[in-house]
Image 1 (cartoon, rainbow, N blue to C red):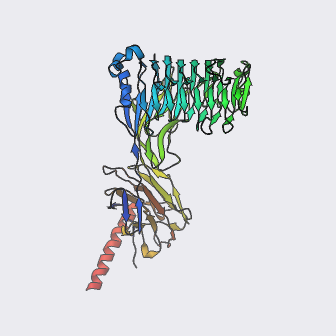
Image 2: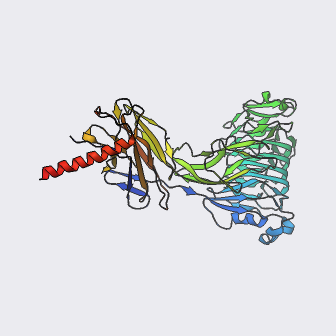
Image 3: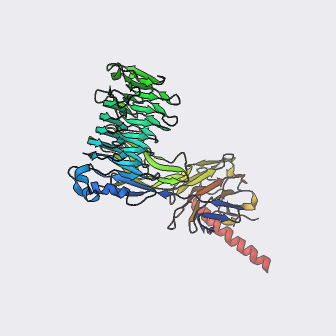
Length: 568
């Protein structure tokens, strides 16, 4: 009678070789399919510390770059930029043109640009003349802009996304003047302006907004013009737009520029019918909209502005606060570099959108809903940390600076266990594992069933564990979407004797370890299919593991003797 008995430990190591054809295409001939492997792309980080460093933004037409300001800059005391602007004494700062840099980011790092001064007749004026960058987490203070036709403290013409930018100062232009932006075609979120704005078409935050969404933003100070609005001069000038969860408490003053009718309003001077407005507010005493409907805009008294119950739609967990005694914005942010896969931006984010000082942030990986992405390494505010961000808190402290994260992501390995397996319970394990992380599972057969040894058979990428007379086995089926040549699969098994002294060989820890082999594992799927067959009752009881080893030796010798007798 043929028997197979498990030895105390069996280790199987198999080197998997994958044929690579072309770039990023892995072909599996035996599996009859071709899989295109996606690639993770990382943005380059360029740090800016001096005023002259700002000109790095236009030194080249960069692609996939994050420009990060690492400290405050003062254009009055840091004269390093003077070498870049020949007429700085007469006209001040020369606005930078970043038009077309749509896949680059300018992250202010929560820092402030001090004493930005411009006195020029250029068409567009501001820190930027025309902008396509994604700009975020930036502050301005003591700024004074006297531009030509179109001026804003941030930019004269904007096509990029702008988030968490806050400015104080004065802006003036002959045609369009906006506290932050003159002409806007990009989405704006969590921005503010406090100061004086003057122009024919004038807005406390934006002079004219088209095709874009403005949200969670506000303005205060004074706005003077022919078409003048506390938050915005004209909304929907070219096409539809949207304004939501925003307010203005700015004083609006009329000033004739020509013979056309004046339009003066506490919120928007001219609002086209294609513009959607929701949960917006302005002060009593001035009509909210001079030309257009009032849908979605409510006027409140100063006292009513101090009560959150009057501000429907305002998100006080992520955007707004009364911490200073008045309605104001949260401005501290978690900011990270980005990696992208196809069209998905992957970054580290906080559990809130924005924070206050002394609050704590729990950091998480945002991979656009993709579960097969994990964190390989990370540095937070210059300090290396563990890559597992779950339930890890980081304190903003009392210094009003954001939390900066520099991380590297990689693809995870997916593990699937068939749910319809009968007579076997699998404990431990999780859905995704990082490369080089050990996968440990415990397979427990039901009473009367067994999972037995490894015979190491390799067939069509299916690894079969014990096939004694084809009636007892467990199958580990590797359905690999793509991992690199040289990665190693290691499987270990052991035999135990249960308390009833019955032979009960189990897989006490299946270990699968993928080495990175000097390259990233672009994708991997491990499908573990478990099948248990009913075991035959053994006639002999085994008292100890030592007895089992003796039996192994006896059975082996007996088998050899029988073979020799047959050969004779």
